[in-house]
Length: 291
Image 1 (cartoon, one colour):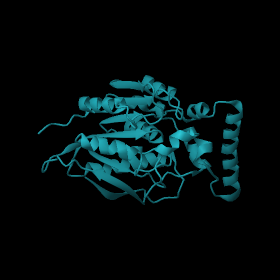
Image 2 (cartoon, helix red, strand yellow):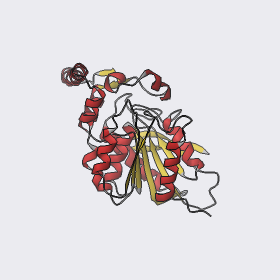
Image 3 (spheres, one colour):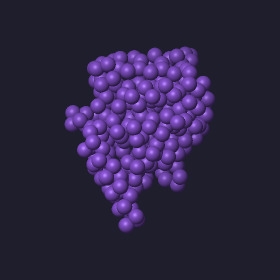
Image 4 (tube, helix red, strand yellow):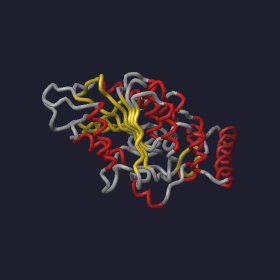
């Protein structure tokens, strides 16, 4: 079962959905995961919800959240900054660790895409997290954007947008709002995997925040806590090299899995390999103690 909850983060009320397995016995504390959605996405009707329900069916308590400015949470729509989302994740941890259903020493974080970058940074810098799962994530914003805007013409257009955003804010004091597709391009056939609550307009400040964000500089601090990097080997949204570079900089224990024949959403669809890999890794590093 899952229930709608709220928690506070920097004075904003954020929305979450708490999944508690029906198989949980009275007074039993279970391992848990916090699930982070992707770029200006949402926790509902999304990749986050699919993964959360999957892990609930395996016996885990799961909290999926809407970052500030996203989904059902408070905050300016489309205005998301990386370190604000790190704060939201830490505050979600504080809320979840106090739940009677949860073993506070066994809480992991799973993030996808933008949420994966946040998960990598937060788990690396907050020792309360027992483990991290980084799905199609990135660790170096500028290099990621160069992969997403690969031609000289595309890169010039993207950097001109960043500069226009800075000038606009200097002139008006307000952020310049731009198309999310000008920030992170996505093939048309992949857009069906996004939540209907996902936003199509974001602040240029958001793109600058991502450009400056470098989770790979702190990922080494996660060790000796385990980390799994999963990436679609044919990802056309986030360059695969981002997960490879994160894995190289991480300490042991660390695992990197590139799933051939999959794009940016390796858990979706009829191919069960991503789900099997995730379940096997959790069984190893965050096992359910069977009653």
